[in-house]
Length: 290
Image (cartoon, rainbow, N blue to C red; front, side, top):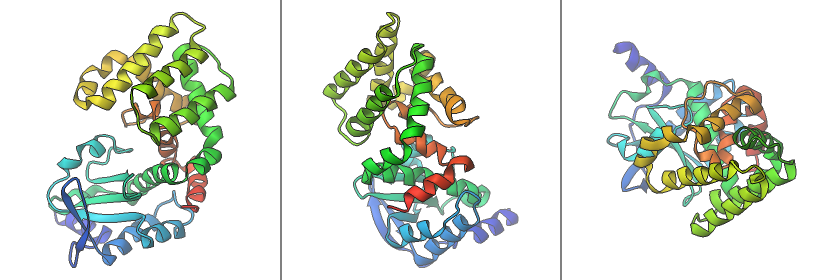
């Protein structure tokens, strides 16, 4: 227990001299300059980051906000479930309304005792990719077009047993990025999604049912998260290839996150890739424009 406390003290300044930063979901978040400095010191030790100045700038401009949360982290259960590396002690998410990445640390429990700088870095990189995608959508697509086409080509080939042309794959990616990830998903969006999939993959009769199943599990996920976890095992033919396509296309193995967001959030693919050294340098370079 004493060793745990020592590790905690070494990683981050304890919550002394905190001030309110922002209120999210009815919960007040607190931060300080000391916390910011300790946060940056932790990132500087990571082998994934080759340019720490990028993150110093983002923290200084309050685009990345490290903060303590009074009480537990249970009210942020959505982000806890889908944390990119399943960190159960530190949470991070990009908030579209404020255009900021929040890194949440709990000081009511000894959460930080087992948190490594490398894990923290992966979390920050992951969420910064979502920030880039939202605030500079065209730059995001331009910088990562090749990786996105590679991933989605593998996925749809696995799912539909059809090798589609890159131009059609990119058209689908662009639709998902503009209409789903950075737009309002409604019934019209689902109709358009259905039409695009049909125009590309309906040449095989059995794919019609797969298209319906893909859209069905996506609708369940977006409207009833509890039901999604109850029934997702029945949609392994749709969801399992999302995970396997990381291995086939990007050589990313042993994912621990739940794969579903790739069906409507293309930046999730690049955010996952950001957690791996073979892609992190390219991604950090792209983040310079934030």
